[in-house]
Image (tube, rainbow, N blue to C red; front, side, top):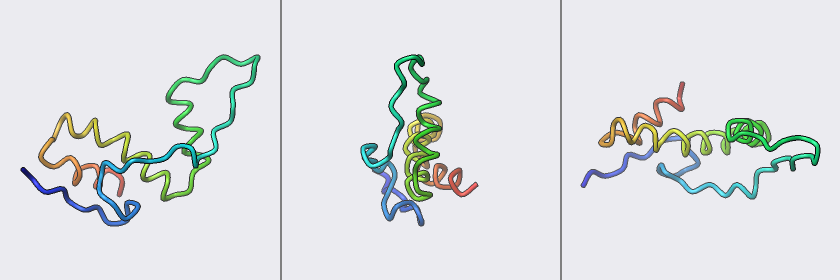
Length: 84
């Protein structure tokens, strides 16, 4: 039962923080172009997001990966990665 570590500068909250993707404009795919890969979709969403939204989105993507490797310190390690 380890308390979560607050991350300064991360949208005022703790990780994981739910992020409402409806506020980020993502261009609709054209009829003649095949669907984007998840990486392209994420890159597009990041390009259209504010710096605070970018940090939140990246944190939400990184946290589950870090949690698999370092469960006890996942929030702290994720925050450290985001500072880089």
